[in-house]
Image (cartoon, rainbow, N blue to C red):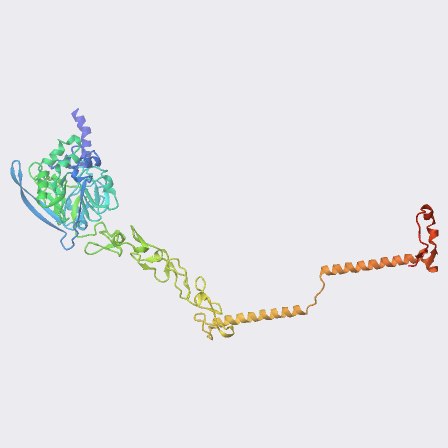
Length: 583
């Protein structure tokens, strides 16, 4: 039965060995020093860390210090030290390396194992190899990693790139922001990701050793220890003597790298002893990094520390462990780069364009100088009003340009300038038009052609000065000749029309002809009727009686007899009625 079990298990073991060849926790002879027995980091939030810290720190859970930026010093100075540490069993000698880094924004970087992409590939490499890739003068191991999966742990920002986000896990942090400030302590996820003054280098440790010059280990136990591990692995991690690695800064803003040689339980320092040692050497803020067999120091790309891991090939010897991230001291560079408004100079500092300042040439000078009355300060610098330019909006647009940014070209002719704001043309005397393209009309001169020539015989004058008897250009003379010729023709035609009007006969209108015709017709009609009546009369009997006797005598008493007899009261005088029967 056992043989059958081995038959199935042995091939599986053969597959597992190559898969976990780099898992230091499964190999014998490794000096492991792990702060957590399960997982990495506490489960509580950043709010709890803030609420539980001493009141004297207020709401701030981290310390910020202005970094050194001197250029007249070497990038770093490294020394080997041997110091006596008083322990419970008496004094013991401890040795290690202390490296003081000047101008850390330009000389110190967090490197992924083996170069960019190492954390994404869960790669682990010896610090020597990473130092060779990064051109490091000095280097030491940095962040923690999972010894089973070789995954980078905590936050990692390398050369301005966010490599890993711990999602707010509350472990001690060390970082450098783009303005050169050093940050130590506990950060929320929002603070890690903020872009107003982003981190250009960031790495996570475990335990804040010194805060503002005071040992801060007991407070770190409450901030970083998971509740189930307060008396377990985390307490052991703090108290046991072992090889250690730390990073801090001094009062001058120089970064201090410390590597302690040792072996867990036998040689080295506890974290309390390490914190006191750093304090005695003028360190203000410091955090603890990965230690034990991971503690490694490299100088000029060569191992300079004494590893505590036994070599896998021969346990008689000690070999440097393959680790995760590393802190690299290199020749001066331009930190997180110089952005769009600067170039990296030979000194390792950004040389900014005019109008820009800051470590990475990302801060417009207008924040301090202002933009005057013709602009406002924005993120990209001074935003000038139309018609103004310059880094502080103090210069009018150059001749021939106008508008926002002075990027529009004037369309004025004949040498006329344009308004720098709207581009309107200001015509010189003697010219007119929207673009000053026209010479003043003949007989007018001066600004806007508003003055009339005062020459004898209404002669033309100079369009610019108004002087009379001036010689005109050939083009103007041709124009005048054409105008005079045209005017002469028009005058001749007008005179001819006037003469023809005087000579032409006036005829009756249509209405007058109608009235005249009707009147003549009516007259002829009356005449015709009269002739017919006369003709009729002559042919009647009356006409013949009248011819024989012009008058007829009839006594009135005979005519009126009947009347008197009928009306005896009526008396008629005795006269006769003569009837003129003649026509």
